[in-house]
Length: 161
Image (cartoon, rainbow, N blue to C red; front, side):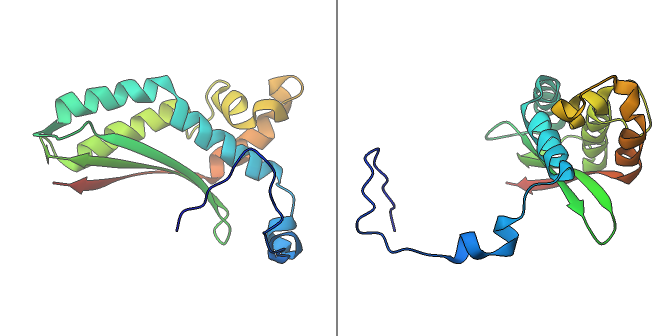
């Protein structure tokens, strides 16, 4: 099935649906936590230093690769546990030159540089809070400490080939 949308508004043939606007889940506003999670994921997927780690990984860690390894990041909140999970998935084809555990540890170290799991500097203030931080960063130390204490870092391989 192909869906084509044109720049001209032509909704004459569309049937109306009320499921989305009437669904409670779709109608709820985003929370500050939602904003922070989106901010973190966006930062990780766009961060330049992570791209350098990838280049380094592809040269030193895998042989016979058909394409460069990639890392995708996902940040989510596990409500029953009250934990923020910052996960990296290493997608590579080819044979690892060293144990995957070491490769995953390298990725975890990179994650720790972006989001240290112990209070250090203002990384969480700047990257996670973003525009929510409207005043002196030190006024947000309690909020940042709660984020840090709930964070869990994860790296896992997804190998093919």
